[in-house]
Image: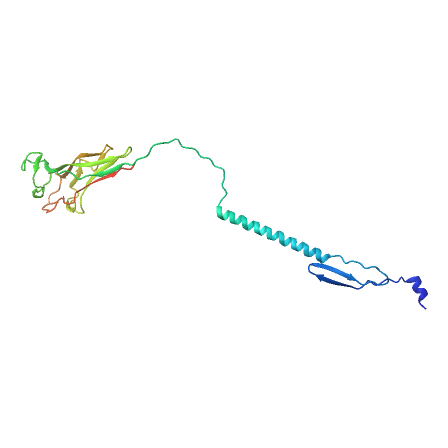
Length: 236
């Protein structure tokens, strides 16, 4: 009944063959059943191609990581890359020495009454026992000695000062009693060879302008027990 129609209007198509795939190891193969006299056909090996691409990508990634790790080890071991450098002798020779600054033990000195009213003696009279001398306004006494000094340095300058303890001068007399060294607050000392004796005079002056009733009847006008010489470098 429909043979004529089928022959005129329909073209019968062969159904695609059934297929089955088998994976063996990493190779994907296919077998195909044929129908209506059709020859077997091969299925494109897409899965195999993708697997190979992924394997290559992982290999490249591992290689990059290994290279990066090696670079990090090299940098960590050597710190920084060495750059070009050059050096040459400066052309200097010899050695540089250091100087010296020191004080030795002063020689035994003596006290004198530099300015006198003529009662104790004339000006310059030796005071045999300074502890037995009782000072009054206008008196000037001086202690002379030689101090071994070492000032060694091509560009060294120093100063020598004299000081006492906490009660060097009695508080009631600080405005009217002065203590100087060679008539100055400090004695400048210039460089010299080796240790040399420096003649110094420690002067104690009791001002003649001391007001009545000031610094009178003091058991200790000036304490001479802790008198100290100090030599120090002067900054430029």
